[in-house]
Image 1 (tube, rainbow, N blue to C red):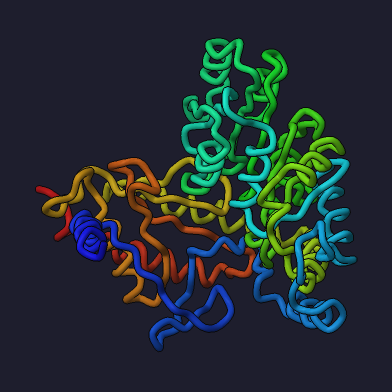
Image 2 (cartoon, one colour; image 1 turned 60 degrees about the vertical axis):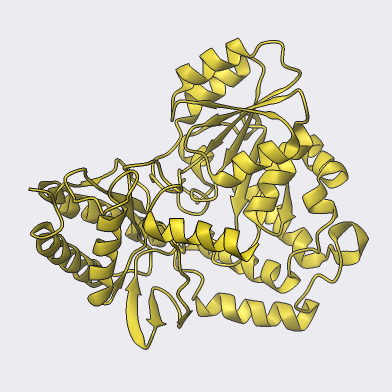
Length: 408
């Protein structure tokens, strides 16, 4: 076994795709990494709540009141007061009759798709959907089909070609995690209604950030909740804690309780974390200035970084806190690279780290061949001085590396 795995690992290194973990300490966006303070622009803590002292205090109070662990699955004795309160609040935030807690977004996606679909059914996915949605479809035994990214017309054509399937579920991210762009829900909803398909939205990166009240992509685009069969949200991004939930109709939530194996056979989320998340929701409701400040950072970043195109570095069209900077084809390819610019993305990341700035290089298979990128994420706790430091470091790295790292 070891020889097979060792050979596979060697190929991963050769292709510039070997991942390594970084052990950190401290509270974001400033971390200690290998003895150095790093200013991070790679966290999904979009509202800066993961380090908010009010959440820490709520977590401590929740642990003293309810304990640290759920102790059992929700259907045995693990569903407590904190879980019940949080589910009601999440339903109100998203506009649905009910919500159901899961331990992770991966489990929530698997829970929904495996409950709604089985063998002989079909799930039609946006081509850039998150891996957990694709895995959930395969594990459910359903047929997996894809439509062109953000194309309701292509979705409609493929739905029409699939007429006669026992059930059809259209699945899309709300905010796409690697590109930062947003699904256009209105035409997608209309096509699903026209062809009697269900629609599921994974709004992990939209919840708390988009919408006047932080209700996510649906709220931001003014779509009535009953027109989307299921919305999945996570607690570990903008809300700053951990876990996930599914929001939907009374019938959907009851079906998940009865039939969703990831829900039935998993110990419940920590009640202390559930209690702390109630404070997160208070902050999302009471402090809209966090979203306003975050939007101002995004606008300024996009304005300043657009000029990097002269170095063949291209900012993707995103108005969300996810700001991907794609490395263009003129950057030199490393020997043995299959698709192109992984080495350049890694070099840019390393140059930023030398300046105390942390942004991850994203490479295939997470993104398509030839589109390696730096995925910058902004947070409401970043200041404009922090952004000045990032911009200065980024422009210096691009100038320096462009002299040696690109083809002539």
